[in-house]
Length: 343
Image (tube, rainbow, N blue to C red; front, side, top):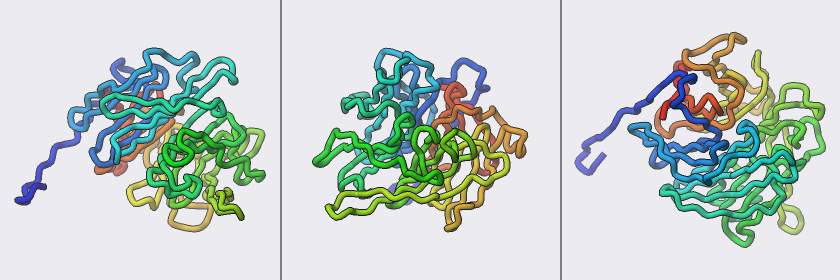
């Protein structure tokens, strides 16, 4: 709206295809610039970053390493976090080999026009998933500096901090875990999948509820308090179970617009988890499903079991899903209908 009160708007255009068509892209990480409504996604196999035009939905390659992953793409994620303030994207660029000790994770900072900086790995990270940005250093463990948090799903200490400014700039630090409690532990054997910043804490979803890889997982809340020397010390509580009938495992999470609920990706389904109550048995509502159990909801392509990240459109009630070889899928939250986007 300009000074005279004239309102200008343009329609949201979705170029949709069936996922079997060849003009979809492998999508492993996604995120929005909240100010400009620009969608970014990564292709972990091709090691590329793409920017999607918000009107034409044409995808342009912003960055590429020029090589491909040595292992199958389903084990690498190239998770991303968008810095809407400084117009740049952070990528946890994981490079996997057939030898776990040969794995490494670099942190890339890529501007919207493709210029990039690399924070070299210190070899303590062996895998990376679900990158989130604490831009203003609000979390105690950020030490009043900009930092990103990610999950090392191989490591025992699964939650990692990478400092982007301040006295510890470029340092990667093991932040939390193991918890020593099967109710809250999210070390590698519990299958940590996705994390979110929630007020002054972090929420970590785990796939399993037992150390032998059995039982439906839950969400652990990690808070931090100061010790006698002012250093942050983590504490752990169970935040929520996954009680919905037919739920299998959490693959990715994203907040709704007012952070009263969390969208949780499951195998072939999207759920809404109401987080307004204090009970760990929080209500869950089915949003979209291509599975028979508990029921099908919405039309469109199947969601599959390779979902790695989700992002809510800053304006429209559409949830975007990074679904691996299924490409990028848009879910209408009002109807549950799904569209595979073509580029």
